[in-house]
Length: 381
Image (cartoon, rainbow, N blue to C red; front, side, top):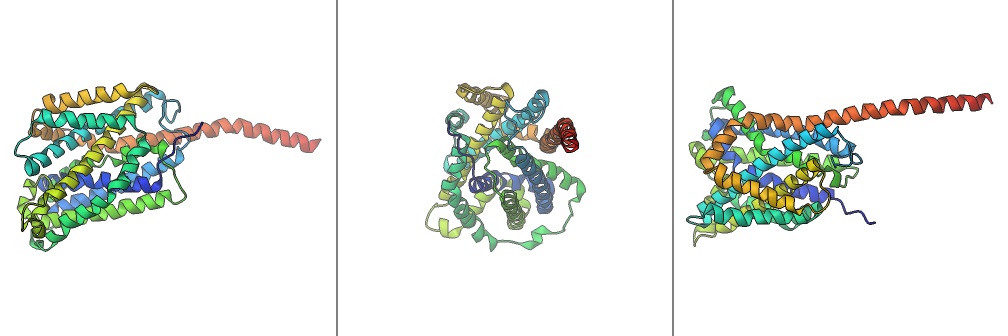
């Protein structure tokens, strides 16, 4: 029986770029500016360093557990511990899905439509997410190879014209907002860095090569530097108005005068960012779907899980969080918890990996003793 093809290093890196840009360059800059004003770049720098450390830990876990992963028939941790960690991951994924839904709706309302009903928007989006549950994980990552050029086109057209509008006086005084605002911005920052959990849940499907870890970490560092530079530019361009720009990089398209001089063509860039959000939504929906499968040990006919997940998201989006303000307040209140989960999830897997290795070593000791005794007997004979 042929085994399904695994996700290649190239596909993983390309999709990680899409996953990285889709929210961090849209929603996060405004949040960091609201908390830390001109020191938003400091928060971005600290958050990037923490993310790189966690990603390095996760990659080590993936490489060490290619044969014993979090699949239901294999025991990386005990069943209860594994399910507990998966529930935490599922919680993070659900929050991410609601964030993406809110951000997509904001982009549509502010740039392409005068007004769009929540229900008219969310129902087709959820059906789009359900469709991802009926394709293999590798197919999702392959979609990144189709759209990755749009990232660079959209990034270049949005950012380069705005560089000339930078005012470096908006970046001073450095550390003028105090340690408290930087700390608050830091744990808000980490809400948008669940890529470690995303990679962890697809660890069994990744085809690792000799230079896999080196290539991925190099990409993560480069993207981190780009993100910090973007926050610097965003703060220097908008100054005190930065906290009002809820779709950061999309707002920068207004500075692309060569796109707007003869008419509104900046909508093309808006469509690019919407497309990236859609791809990330589908991938995150699939990750939540996989987590539910692992928790309940569902192997066949799992399509109904996608519809159940869509129903829960619909209730949360349209009824529990009746407005964006309600959800933002909720997100603000639980930010410390999400930050804790960001560290707990990979650390729990890492501790489980160490325990498993120790147990495996203890099981091998009796066998090794028997083999040495047999060798001694043969030598005596």
